[in-house]
Picture 1 (cartoon, rainbow, N blue to C red):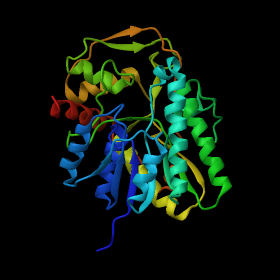
Picture 2 (cartoon, helix red, strand yellow; picture 1 turned 90 degrees about the vertical axis):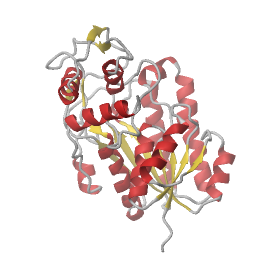
Picture 3 (spheres, rainbow, N blue to C red; picture 1 turned 180 degrees about the vertical axis):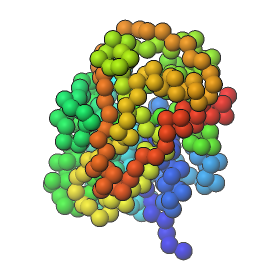
Picture 4 (tube, helix red, strand yellow; picture 1 turned 135 degrees about the vertical axis):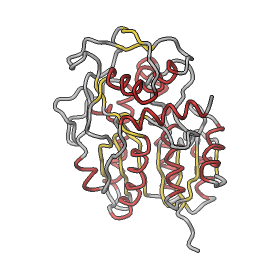
Length: 336
């Protein structure tokens, strides 16, 4: 029997990382999880093992501890790395920029230095559409100017620059950078999904907490944007479609030793009110909401041009907005 290719997954206990770990196992890879558990919980690891019937290698480590990373990497024959770990709140980054630059940028530098020391040169990086800032044209393609409007987006852009410079310095590196739009939904089992503590920064978890009765009202931040219903429009993508793009990116990195950037979205735009209505229809629950002032750093309208990722990665998003809503709610019901 051939040895399974071992893939390091940083942030593998998080929302996106946990789903990627499940998909990696289903595709015949052996994921090794590194997570500080700052934004996640050890119970997620248990649920991944329950879904897959696989005992996982898990290490609770902060990426800024380079020596521990080297110890882990040296214990396995690592083929590649998928890098999800990092802080991700746009609003929180505005108030805590140093924390974001330390965790996201310094953490990535430490990871790259450990990879180079251990001669691991294939990486898929979790970037963000926030690197584009306010759109100059739509849909946004990969050549769109990069003008992030908040420290979170800046941290992602700085990391992209580091990765690009690294590939330019040596032909041995192969790095795929995925600019996500708005992942929502959950695994079909209902065992893993997104359920942050407190008042969520992102829309779907906020809707879920109101639907479950944990919060009384959903605040919609602004209804005076230049959009059809006055609320922000976003490109929502099912988490399963998103993580499938990572599998395709791992395959792509084997044949193309360079720095490549791809948008990962659906190319469709839904407003805040559109998503609320879709959720109400999918699960038959009325969402109580009120209008609040705009948040600093929010963009009015963003959606992706995905022609490049469709062509190069041989990847397409296929799940509907109804499936996104239903699977997210199933996760909440399963974990009550």
